[in-house]
Length: 231
Image 1 (tube, helix red, strand yellow):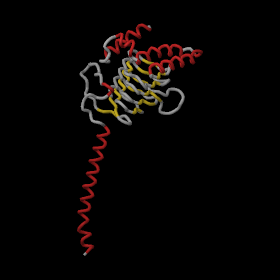
Image 2 (tube, helix red, strand yellow; image 1 turned 45 degrees about the horizontal axis):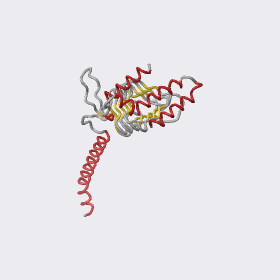
Image 3 (cartoon, rainbow, N blue to C red; image 1 turned 180 degrees about the vertical axis):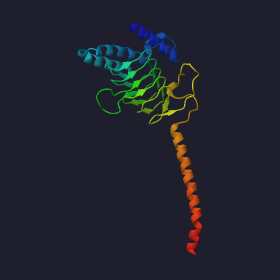
Image 4 (cartoon, rainbow, N blue to C red; image 1 turned 120 degrees about the vertical axis):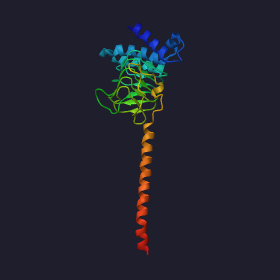
């Protein structure tokens, strides 16, 4: 089982990271892969209540060596790729599906302190861009894309791209029927999808222009009355 995990992970890094030139390079030089290996050991220890402290210490060693912090209770799917990895934090009750791609400085954290499920559940084939924060016991659907530096506090439907603070959906060009979802580097849409914040600003600008025009018409309509009163 451990060999299957390593073989799948090495293949995933080779296929999805153009900088990976050889399997040996990935095995020796990729902290995301190393973090996954340390987590598998820590997670196995976590299953036994008497070994919870060794499990935490094992994950602490992994964090010290890789710069990636993964709680031993977190559940990670198969073929997970953590690119660059420095500063990634994955909390205790977080769950990640298969074939996901996570960049550096990503946090799967809590929105508030509470017991029970506190961290996000990430579906399959999800890309989370650098610096993104996914907070609370929310669900991110399959094939979703989370843009760099987005702050996600609401559920994300499947096949949706979200960007911004707070994160909101942007349009994605529909893929061909039955086609595999495209790989979007850093979770950002590759087309000319409009920024939702810019859209809101444009709406405000239009409303302000309409209000200015209305005020101008009202001023023009009341000007004769003021002139008569002045006479």
